Image (cartoon, rainbow, N blue to C red; front, side, top):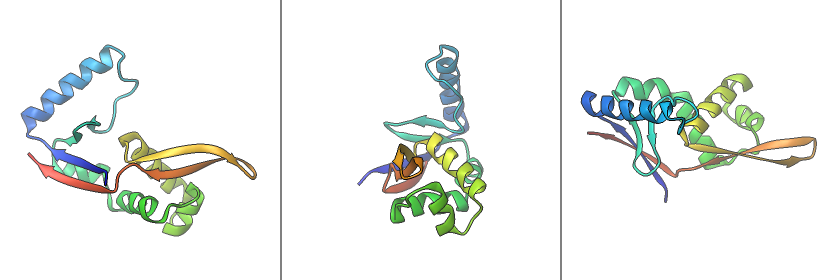
Length: 129
């Protein structure tokens, strides 16, 4: 079972992580600034619970759970299952992919290329440090 740890750090520790992240961005080791400090070996870091809630909204958690549990064939199929607008679901999928919670696998389909959705984790844990 793959578990992602979502950690809320103290302001000082979070600031330290952001400083280190800025150095990586400046040295071109990261291509873009993520919405949260991400470290694959130990989880995703946020400064506060409010920051977690801004990124991991109820709708985005529903998207992640649906991908994990129902394995939809495409983003369109996912939007259909969730009974939500395709564009809104696509935005949520894009953000979840940036955070590393899901993976988009591109491949050939009947009418061109399709994107298959895969959850990278079985469980998310929230940890306050």
